[in-house]
Length: 239
Image (tube, rainbow, N blue to C red; front, side, top):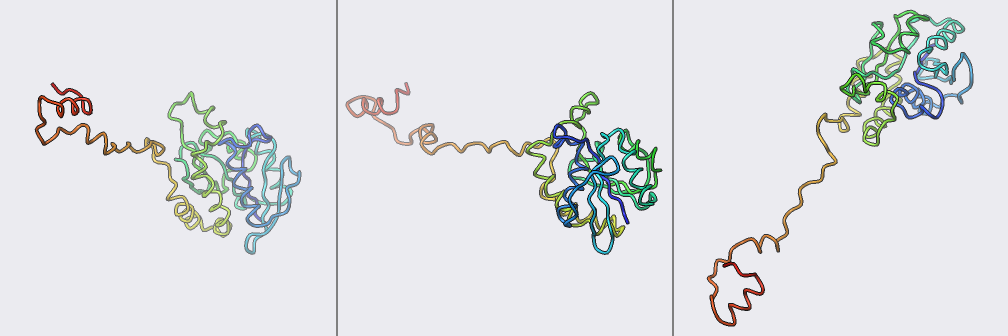
């Protein structure tokens, strides 16, 4: 059995936060692979099922992010799962939005949920880091992480979550490179481009009437008489 834990904070207040992308990812996997309904266990919500030939337990800790290790550790001890059988999905500030990296071990990188799991479960488990981007200013990090995904974010988020669910078999099989490659292909057309405002409308083309009015007439018009008076009324006095 493998344990896949997606990290986040419980409750509707945090449901759409960037910090909850781990919850979103395991939710997408559960739907795609017809897992059991979620039930309360191990201080979290669990769903079980199969991906390929492997039995998998999905876990969303309900201890709040900073104590994620309590829930994950309890599930691991009950099912006698060692760190090699644990996969953790979570948000990563230091990766651009839509980018995903998988690695074994490493540091917590300032992520309190990972720091808690390291303390309770050891460090030699697989970490699936889901990029949410950095706001650029340290003082804005908390607001960014605990803020909801924007409408523009969903242009890459939804294809990414679908691709993670569709290719979970590669993750289960240990084909981390194949998994990341599939995600990159799925989100290629929706990658955000830093500094580019794709919502900016194109400049309006100048109307042919306005263009015509700005052009000087190539024909010399009479300066006096009824015809000259009529032209002045139509086009204004150019003198």
